Length: 152
Image (cartoon, rainbow, N blue to C red):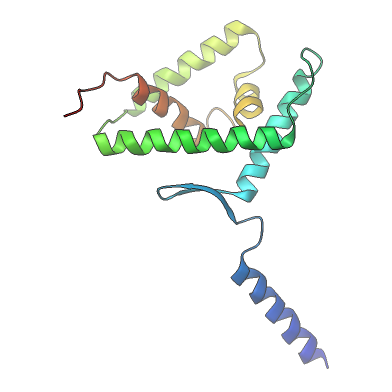
């Protein structure tokens, strides 16, 4: 009898993996970069946490659905720009990224709107200012600010 229970449990687990659990299902994909449901939910939670800290100073916060829509749009736009820049051969050095991050830090410090990590987590839903995910933002900004060559 115990063998049948284990067999049923094993088959159920295999079925779940084959179908894909909701946590690992892709929400958005650009080229070969995927935003999973689990990663999106984590980012939404970070933004909501950041908004709760700011709620006293502002009006009502956006809904979870509104935050999700904004984060998915940011993910898609960011990765489209990065892909296009890569196609065009635009590169950004680590030094350029470090300089851009330093500028962001300085602007946040001067604005008095919280610590750098709080802003990165609360507004972008990313783990923090030193995360690889965040370092894509200055890369994107640097690529967007580069002079464009005429289209031929």
